[in-house]
Length: 379
Image (cartoon, rainbow, N blue to C red; front, side, top):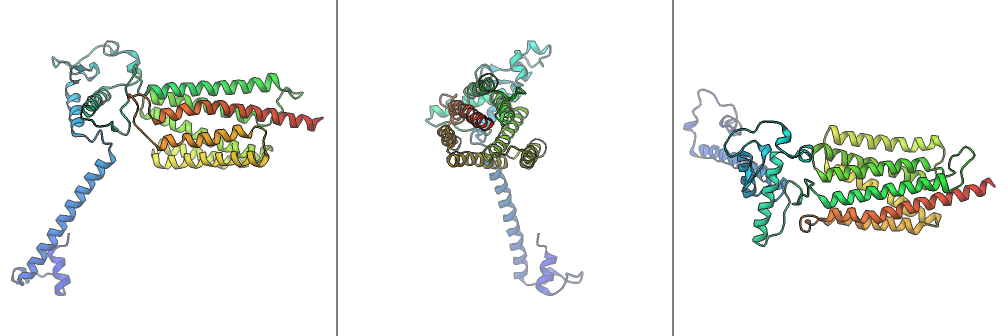
């Protein structure tokens, strides 16, 4: 703060001495000091209000609602929302703390999903507030960054879980049909290996895809810190390897040393990014930028390569590229879940199911096309 001593030094040419009496100075001196102090107070007040508003804006509309906050606070004290009481809150009506085996307090599947007192309080307070908002003609709002979904058997987002499981099944079907094609339908080399030179890469891609959809289903089933990190890390690993695969296939990199030189920098970056998210800072904005860049880069590489080489199955590849790009609009145009179950993200999961079938169909066509070309060269 601008002190009286500093003011005297600036305006009167020297520091304030013991012999000086500031109360003998002209009246305008005291008014100036008072004005400076008032301005400082205004700035402090403005800064305090600004910090408060920033915190409010960072929160979602739902969890910033005073009625919702009061409901959660009351529930955490009493263990009840209306007539619904939760044993794991350990606040029964008689005031005695609930003790005893955990299997007497809540079902096993809820225990495994780590539903605790705070989670149940937030969930049921959210449902009550949404009913009140609906009665007033207001639409749904987000709570703690998520739309108000309705649980089914303890599952947070049942539609997204089911669609993630279907994507997992589709990836497994595509990978298995690719494996059968190479090993039982196409000709093999004398050493019993496939002629297709990208077989191993596609097998790794299939495993990473299934792993990513598995953790997607787990994350949508129960959103906790561990499942969130596993879901995001699996998705980043899949995108990074998909970009490497696109570069190696489209530029026809077949020499092992060249593949290592191309892959090593990208693998290092993806690994560093995953470690950064998990052990330093879980930055959603930075992660989104990284994923978008890797996703768009590989889509452009595949689309241009299909047109330049005039691949016989290029229309399948273009369908996946265009369809995937349009499906991403569902992630941009976010809307609340219909009847509390199906939102834009769930519909995005639905669109990837047919695209996955077409994608693996293209991969199998590419294997047949490359095998036929290599057999011609051998003959």
